[in-house]
Length: 466
Image 1: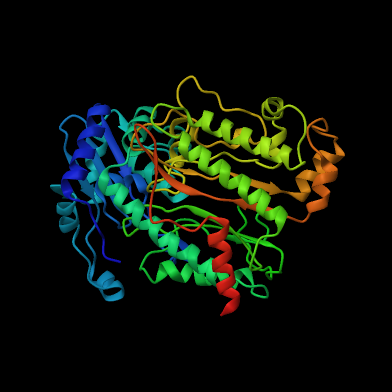
Image 2 (image 1 turned 180 degrees about the vertical axis):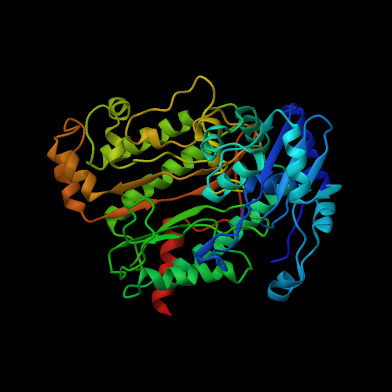
């Protein structure tokens, strides 16, 4: 895929902003390297580091971006392709051409950079998440690898988060493109899944949908009749009548912005009565949370309201009992809703989480809960206009968790274990949309993706009529 860029003024503006926030020393941003699957020349698909992309847009391995806090100058560090490279991979744009498209005036070699970098007393870099990245930075900066893992600049982290968490109009366009491709993927699942197929067959059709758009997935596809397993990446089960099929997947846009959508459908042509009841409760919770979102409110409060809605609905259905506020305060509802309501979305599907959730999802004065369920809330901070996030409530019947809690007689004042036994095995239901935060409310990004029971059942009937 040809490297795509925003207008160079966008990258120049971002670099000026980061230098105004971190004005001392040198900011060092490495690109990612190619990584071998089983030997060096047989590589995994290359994915550029997201912060590197954010500040220059160059989608090529083996580079380094240097931002001089004293002069305000940006340097791109790397080596031009050799004749051998061209023979094996074909001609590519020169580094000078790529730098020009990113608004960078100066390109230097790694050898030149190695002489230049030690002149700076303070070097700022972000947390590393790959071992090869840590080794490379260790050699460049001249400090031990352990110091790379522990030495990330907190001031740079906070500055990058403040810039990346607010999405510009061109970024919203990219996110919308990713979500629209994701919607096509979900329609394929809804239209072709039938009893007797394997999860792998459906997954392959879903993935080919985004590949035909010349993009790939933003994260490993979750597509399973065991939707109660939150990150289930196995695809060996055969779909059976009466089961639920949960699909959580998303495409990347051409510029690597992520879509992240979940839908849950019946394997049969229609939901059962209990499936409809629980699906309706999840959808009600999703709609209520979306209506509550606006700039200035804490996402923690939206999450707790969603937990209250789930607890109340599960009490109405007979699975919980007792005082609703006590159920949520004690965490008994987490038997059915053991994760957070959502997370930030952008260049990463869990946007910027490599920088640390205490910066990306929480704010000063907030302490992350240790309570089961609530501790998994990735985004709790005060929302701002321009943030993009997921809203993804779910209800799950996890046999292993239920068995342990029942044996321990845990929350027996609140949980009706006999009623739960009546519906096992059930699976899980999650419904997820991608939301843009505005000053007075929220916008669901992308074209509508079916989630009403009537819409889904109509598509499922069509699948069996073919």
